Amino acid sequence: MTQTFAIDVIQTLHSDEANEFRLFLESPYFMQGFKQEGVRPLFEALYLAVQNGTIETLEKEDLHEQLFPGREYVESKLDKLMSELKRLLERFVLVQRYLSDDNEAQQLLDISVDMRLRGLETRYQQALEKTKKKADHAGGESLKSLFFRYRLAMEEQEWHSTFNKGKGDLNIPETINHLDVYYFAHRLWMQNHLLFMQRAASIPITLEQIVDIPQKALQSSHFLDISRDVHVLLNKDALHENDFNQILHKIQSHEQSLSPESLAEFYAYLRNLCVILIDAGHTHIHAVLHEINKDNLRRGYFYLHGKISPNACLSMMQTALSVNDIPWASEFIEVHKDNILGENETQDFYRMNKALCLFGEKKYEEALEMIPFGSTYSFYHLMARRLELKIHYELRSELLDHKIDAFKMFISRAGRKVFSANLHELFTNFVNFVRQLSQSDGPQARQRSQTLLKRISEKERVAERLWLLEKARELGGKR
Image 1: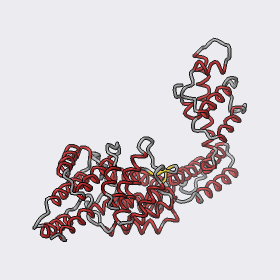
Image 2: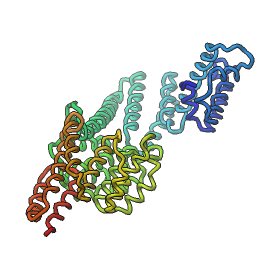
Image 3: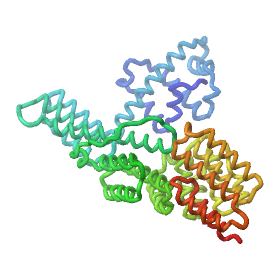
Image 4: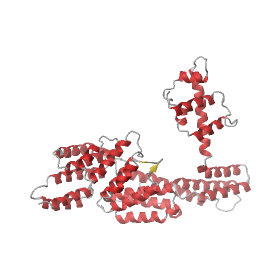
């Protein structure tokens, strides 16, 4: 049967929700304007087909026969009934969402608004105080909580304006401050995301740097203050380790005042800043990043519905292997092999990360066989190409020169149209150094070792820097 809105929603219902919807269909209030006859049997038929796994093979004619046995097939009648069910499911989902415990603060605010519109001053003040207490215990600052506080201040301003007794500032200054906090926090959140993306991909969009944020707004919100610091840092030409340490300290100092969602976001910023520092030559930051990764994994910051994004998985693996924590990396990928986001590529994600582990264990042939090529995820495709090159170097393969040429061609064709200038430089320097390493055997190996160590260290951006330095040092030990 063709997938419809009703079927899509029914496929997401667990058994308790299905029972709640049945009760919903029996409510005269919620069923106003709807014809109950026929809707309940349609829901039951579709729900049963979903549970039995026969929904895709269910034909309209068969469904019509179930609902109207012995009657002539009239498609429009079934379509109208399906439309009724769609509207009822929409109403059910909205009611369910609005009345959820997670939306209690919004419910309290709406009660306050209603009391104001009815002119019930005492009841209004009681409802508003209850709303404020709920906001104060909302679990830390987040964009959602900042927006709610602005709306709460705006409601107070509305009350003072409506019942103006000629006294006070009508709560206008406080409302403006909450508006500033939310506006700048949300704008910074979006701009910082864009700035991080521009370090990985060619996105020719320039947004004006935010600098003039009211001091009162900054002092009112740790979320805004930290977001501003990250923003200033990302707009610098060069990132320094002290800058990173200051932001790390500020986040750790204010953890109690931030929501879990906000902390997860800020630690994601920190992890990205670590990668930027590592790419710029601060290789000792690998150890810092590995500890942050392990801490964030314990806190659940990497998980979305119990699964981890493929890029986060790859980043954690690379970092663990960079500090030679192979046991942790091996255990991590085995535990999460079936919990990586991506319906069609989950096994490829596992194979790529497993190949990295095998490479770390110096099982080069096994690693080469494990690599999945052609991933639609650019970071996985690039990792596969780089790992292949490293393996052929380790094996002293006759195919190495050919693989180097192929990698150079790939980087050249993609160029800055796909990669950011920073990434293009990272990969270009990497393949150039692999070429130089491959041509450094022989009597001049020791001398070439020192030259390469110096060149690799001096380059601002080099992918696989630790591995390249290790291979350059090995040249120095050859006779």
